[in-house]
Image 1: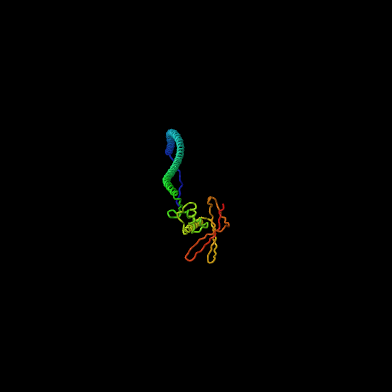
Image 2 (image 1 turned 90 degrees about the vertical axis):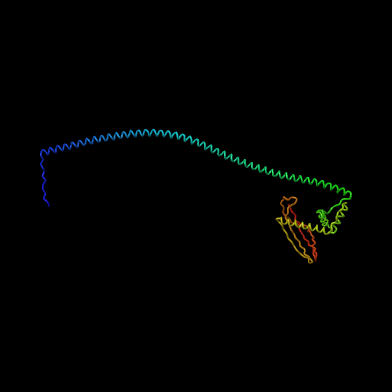
Length: 323
């Protein structure tokens, strides 16, 4: 550990004291001068700042004034543009309304045009149909006219032939012809069937017709034989069967029944048929069937074979059509 010594204060001389006093004064003066300089600099700086702020404020004020003018100009321009835009909008709305009205009128005109075209097409079709119909009627009338001309010429020829025949008949008497071009007429066959139905024998029908004509003053050109009478009866039977089959096929309601018996090895069959048919005098009325008892009808058919001859008898009930 080292040795400590007590620090003793030195005594100053008068020069040193004066020198220290002058140094202290100089230091105080320097600090005061520095303070003044600082204050001057600060005031100058503040002045410069104020000047700058005033200049900046003047510039800002000028900018604000110019901006205000520009804003006012832009505002007036915007107002004018808005007014013009509003006018354009009103004009556009008016044009839209006019366009809508024009579209409606155009649609109405198109619809009317379509209706007129349809009407014209319909009228043209009707006219075409009438023209076609009139052409067909004209052709038909021309055909009828030609037919009438032919018939008139034929009528004149027939008239002259009839007059010639009447002159010959007056000279030689009237001749009734049972045949036409070698074939017995329908009237002759019907007359033969009628005479057979009233009881005249088949072999006597031709002679009966000749005798009746002779009594009436008419000469018959030929005599119908037994075989021809049989053929006329068979023809009527076939036609009746065809008609019966047709009626049965066309009828929506039909009832039939049958019964069979034999006597001396000969079979006898009875058949009953009920068919719903219309009233031929009034075909439009609705009809129904009512089956009533009536007299039996017998149809005799002679069937000739190599070994035997049988007689078939069929019994039918009358079916009366009631309104």
